[in-house]
Amino acid sequence: MEAQPGTNVTYTLTWLETWESGIAVVEAETELIEVPFRVRKSVTHNLGSEAFACN
Image (cartoon, rainbow, N blue to C red; front, side, top):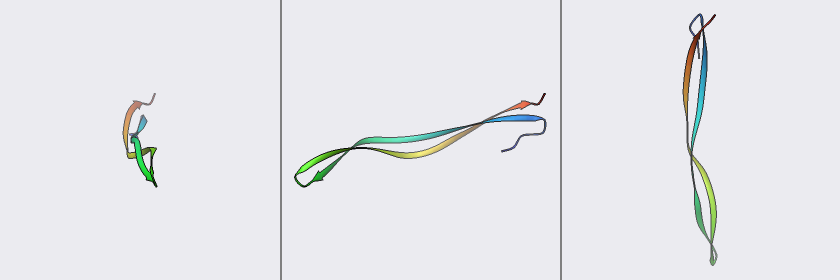
């Protein structure tokens, strides 16, 4: 990341995660067991910047 001469730059990085949760049903011998789960589906980011003149 760079800044033009005579400026300061503030960068903002935002991390975005998408999660899915639910209940999996597992058959164990003669009974059904409900198991809660949570899985991360995706990870993305957004990068923003704002330049300021040096004083």
